[in-house]
Image 1 (cartoon, rainbow, N blue to C red):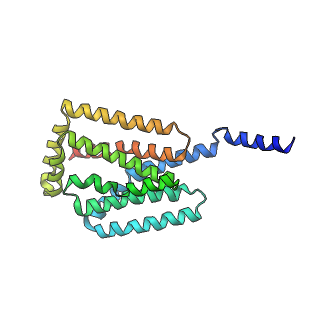
Image 2: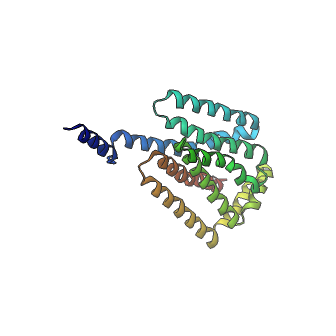
Image 3: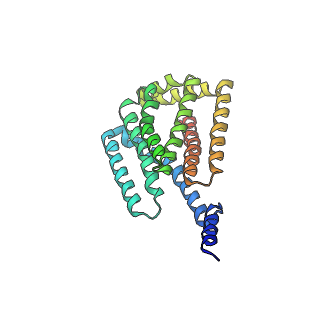
Length: 234
C-alpha cells in the first residue's frame, strides 16, 4: 500500500461516525450527570441559601475550583466542563433565592447571569458540554417562568415567599385551582410537549454536549413535577 493510500484510508476511517461502546457509555453518563445536577442539588441548595445565602454564594468558588481540577486531572474533560456549567446555575440560584426571592420579575435576569459567558465560550469553542448544560437548564427555567406568567401565578409566588408557614398550604391550593383550568392545563400540555420534543431532538445527536443539553431540559420536567406533587400534598 502506498503512503498516500494509507493516509487516505485513515482519513476516511476517521470520518465514519461509527458509535463505539465507550462513546455510548459516555453519552449516557453525560445525560445522567446533567439530569442529576438539575434535579437533585436544588433540594440541597434550598435550605442552605435560605439560612446561609453567603455560604451558598461562596460554594460557587468551590465548584469552579473543582471544575478546574477535573479539567486538568480527570481523563474525561467533560466532567470539568459540566461542573463549570453547573456553577453558573448554582451562582444564579444563590443570588436570587438568597436576596431576591420575593420578586419574581428579576428571576430570569438573574438566572441568565452566565448567559453572556456561555455564549462567548461557545463562540470560542470552549467547554461545549458545560455551556450546553447551562443553556438547557436555563431554557427549562424560561419555560417554567413563562407558564407562571401566562397563568397568573406570579402573585402566588410573591405570597408564598412572604407568608407564614401556616398560610403556605392555602396559597398552594389556590395556585393549583388556577392551574387546573382549561387554560392552565392546555399550556401545561404545550410546554411539556415542547420540552420533551427539544430533548428528543438533542438526544438524536452523537455529540456529548447535546446529551448534556437534553438531560438538562428533560430533567426540568422532573423538578417541576416534584414541586407540583409537593404542592398537592401540602
